[in-house]
Image 1 (cartoon, rainbow, N blue to C red):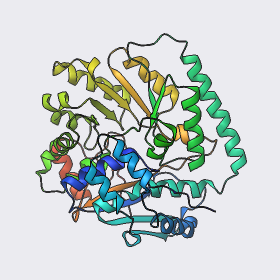
Image 2: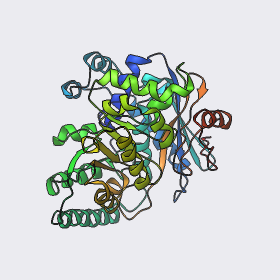
Image 3: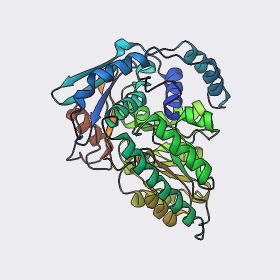
Image 4: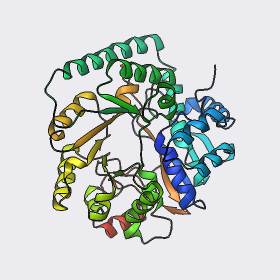
Length: 403
């Protein structure tokens, strides 16, 4: 059977945008990324270990092809020196390790951050596809097609409803938790063909290139977390990260992620300067309606016209939730909706809730202090308590501590 990952473009756009920034701003950083399964799978993930290791071996044999580099170079926010770096890049197998711990699968990537940060999406896509190969593929694909048909029908019915002031737009954010590589391509291709008024792009760079879609993405938690460990004052890490992003992209990729230490602490740092420079904000934890109201209230306090800004929602969405949020906010600001698992792994099977998060940088712990119970992640409770104290936010009762 051919390897699951066959192109180094088969990943999220924001891996490239963060990668470029790290190469230019903090090329010396050392990092550790840790795999974590948040739910209980139907069988032990440790059983996948031999196949995971074989897939990692194959991944480390891949290189960027000339046509792939040419595509990246065509994106105006990708710099020539970064693409030149990718021309000589290859994953080093010594930097990633997969082991079994009883029923649990353990995967760690450790080494130079400008090397190991790119493992994340590939690892998650590999584990997902290997896991779902053990189920009845024919039955899953039949159910997946039925559910995709229902989504298209829902969008066609929605097209007949009165629109809000701003258009409804959604995107595929489903690389990491997809049922399979081939199913993601099928689902994205159908949405592009059958719902072009609403479906506006994908985070998957390979599919964006192959299907002529807009590649979507800006930054993830790991980007801001890195700044907790690069020598800036901890209280200033968000502002330092946002400033470097502005200097790197100078008007492109202007959606800021808000929940590394919670929305309230983010807005305390997101002053008039940043609010004018960034095009909008992305939600990824906490109640989305409350988050949206806080964002609009913040823009109003700064006397910024919210119609010139965009709120992007991306936390556990399906179409019905996205449409409900659009109805609430679509007359008040621009919106966008990144839908992941519900587009690429809605097959009648319980999806895995797996992540691979930055847990240490430059020899010290880093943390995400989420607005959603259970999504805070840190392997050092002492650092987490200090971070919470610095930003004046409560320490969550629920904490993910990667083994």
